[in-house]
Amino acid sequence: MSAKEYIDDVLKFIRECSPGQNEFYQAATEVFESLTPLLEEEEKYRDYAILERIVQPERTIIFRVTWIDDAGKIQTNLGYRVQFNSTLGPYKGGLRFHPTVNLGIIKFLGFEQIFKNALTGLGIGGGKGGSNFDPKGKSDAEVNRFCQAFMNELYRHIGTTRDVPAGDIGVGAREIGYLFGQYKLLTASFEGAMTGKGVGWGGSFGRREATGYGSVYFAEHILNSHGDELKGKTCCVSGAGNVAIYTIEKLKSMGATPVTCSDSRGTIHHPKGIDVKTLKAIKEVSRESLEKYAQLHPDATYIPIHKYPEGGHAVWSIPCDVAFPSATQNELTLVDAKNLVKNGCKLVNEGANMPTTPDALEYLRKHGVLFGPAKAANAGGVAVSQLEMAQNASMQRWSFAEVDTKLFGIMKSIFETADETAREFGHEGDLLMGANIAGFRRVADAMIDEGAV
Ligand SMILES: NC(=O)C1=CN([C@@H]2O[C@H](COP(=O)(O)OP(=O)(O)OC[C@H]3O[C@@H](n4cnc5c(N)ncnc54)[C@H](OP(=O)(O)O)[C@@H]3O)[C@@H](O)[C@H]2O)C=CC1
Ligand SMILES: O=C(O)CCC(=O)C(=O)O
Image (tube, rainbow, N blue to C red; front, side, top):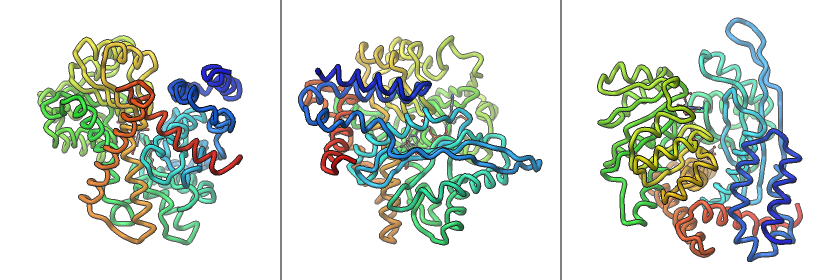
């Protein structure tokens, strides 16, 4: 059986046994197809049934979360934790609270996390969790009660050497605080079983900034390898949450001009550069719509979602040198890729998980646009989460500068690993293939060492 036949067989099996899990299938297809050159060279991964095993989570926990809203009404949501792969260390990955969360979404995120975590070179396995709970529009008290109810089940499945959740969409500093508080109460112990904690109570300096800063460092490494740099570049960033805000902040400090941000209702275009202070005040503090930004900055334009180009996103119709999709999956479509190419975009660097659709990716590739794949470009967040675990375990506290220097080094090493691996397999410059093969190879070789489990 050829490598391609082996891959097709396993993909067919995934389609059959995970119906309706489109995002999971998309993620698995992208990873497996790029493994073709490795599987052609190495029979052992077939002999040890690595693909068949790696697509199945080691454990999937689905639970009911019942809580009471401010009106005294009982509400029910679904909670998930997919403990995908613990070959390299305790399961590690965020929790997403968003109404679109379902098993397929959590499985796609958990699957990506396995290879992302492997690429960091650190000892962390892959997992992901979340709920279809929507924190938007809820009072702090409601979010608190929901988080407590969620943790009432989750606490028995996590722990410092077992599974260490963190944040993702809809789970920021507030939610981590409420979740950790309940974990502490239920276990009667103060331990680093979650990351992204506040810096005053066990969190690491730099974790809040890590995904955005890391994404910018990764983009800089790509450009440097082509004799270029971010300084002086016009950048478009989508999203207005944790990843987007700290991408914008770091871009500005490196001399680039980030001219956009977006939320689920609209896009801001500010040609002189997004004002980070205003953005943080609107999104991190008062949790309002970006429309407010344009009220405070009359030289910025607000484009509401109903005015977006057909089948596309307003952010990607604005001319830029570098694009940083940093909101959610499949947010950059073929229409957007065409707009980016038309406007001379040189690099798309993925801050979000799987933000580029397969046809958009194909189009960018055909037109010579450089590409920073998510599992490499946004690995800075989970990497600093592991640094938080290390500090907790050793009861140490590192300075912001120390963590940031480590983050910069980790992003450089991820870039070099992906770049060298792509070259090793004759696909120079294909960082997607390089990242997928390098991440997979580390996990797969360890799976062989650990036997048939
Ligand atoms: N946080 C982290 O450390 C890491 C996050 N990621 C990935 O980065 C991405 C962003 O996460 P994060 O910044 O943490 O999440 P946040 O919840 O902090 O922010 C998400 C932002 O994206 C916007 N958004 C979400 N869904 C959509 C949509 N369908 N259309 C348009 N805008 C949307 C939200 O808008 P609104 O404000 O209206 O809700 C919000 O501004 C996700 O893909 C996540 O998986 C990857 C690695 C680590
Ligand atoms: O910091 C973490 O553990 C999780 C980060 C995350 O969810 C991600 O990398 O997508």
